[in-house]
Image 1: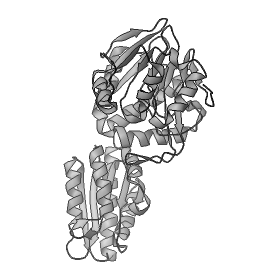
Image 2 (image 1 turned 60 degrees about the horizontal axis):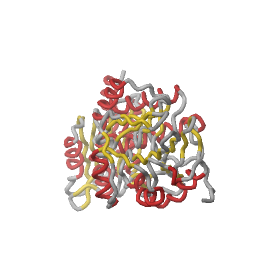
Image 3 (image 1 turned 180 degrees about the vertical axis):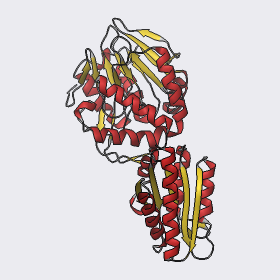
Image 4 (image 1 turned 60 degrees about the vertical axis):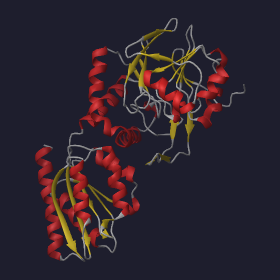
Length: 402
């Protein structure tokens, strides 16, 4: 096979053979401003192993990268860490091309792969903690159920200390710089937080349990190789990503507030600006996000490390604005925790939006501080009330975030 694409060595006899998706801008409702990668890994041992595949349309890129190292038909084993289609879409064609001796997945992975891809070949279910000797190297499987699918698992290359972590510790970031230490650190941190906020935030309690499980397993993790984005290969970067995930999973509040709103004739906008000024006056870092220019997934990213979320909407047809409902429905599914919340809005004759926003806050167990509902255009006195609400929230945040 001609090889326009080349494998990248990440350790002795271990190669990145994935695909780069420069054009991806939407990942099931989450805006991916920098595209993505679909990482797959080739391990050379007595048994040659492919860890994960790629999105279906990138099958040829995967095969060409493999071919730059070894004839794909020499692959003995394929491991599927995660059945989601961006990692398994090419699997049926790869199986036909390679005809591997064995395919491995978690118990739920076997079920999901067969149901999604209608595979009629045998897939070997591996147990949590099970090890596989591939001749000169040893693999260990770690079940990570619901992080973030029921079938998810890690594969650990024991002697090399490489954790193939599927979607955990990953990010949607298309780059030819395969390693984190070759990338801009600020970009990596932003995309890491964005991925966590939009994909893994609902599973934060399970992630805390995962760290306890990894400590008990006594893994000596020297490299973290996720299924999206660059690889963490230095001790500093490995410690950094693990510590960031621990912080994200705790969802500890910071002295930051997010003011999210839409407006009809400018009155709710005036309220938002006054609340934001009150927050800033009180000493809180504030991000003002008018929905007209902000995607729901970017709101989620800001909410991850915020200690307070303040949402405003006018009322239309006895309901909050559709754009506000969109953002709140998305956030409700992500289940942010440990945050103060407040609702505000202007209305003409009914004004249900503020209560509807408050109801959503209460449904996900956020602590509702207050709400402000103003008819028509706010007066100077009413804008002062909005300012004071910002000051009040800031004071509460500083008490919680010394």
